[in-house]
Image (tube, rainbow, N blue to C red):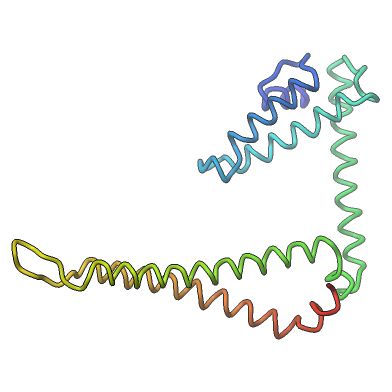
Length: 194
């Protein structure tokens, strides 16, 4: 029952081989990746596709390839889900027992911290770029535009540049605030962890 659902998610028949499953996964994952597909349910669909792929590849492994009966496949799914759930709980329990300083040195914490810091620096440079681009845009457009031979104040251009500059300043201030905070709090930690 559950395995049938996974075959449907990937759009392959129930007698599909590993190669078909992998090809279907690549096509579906590309079609529903949230960076490419901006529809409302794409994120959940992408997660379902990954879950289906992981399960079906596991189902086609050597130890389970001889399962042909649907009730046996359903039983395999239940055991598989329980194993995966237990693995996640064991990892969480292990991390919960760590001291916070030890947890900060863990791979998952450092990776997410680095990604967060990279995002802050990206937003900082994006804010600077937006402010420069807005200033350049105002410079090239000018404060006045020609309208039927008369020069009139370019109000729409000025307002647009003010809004863009405000957005750039917001990016700049928020990212700079985050950078300063983790530099002050984590200076000692970052020196010791690299």
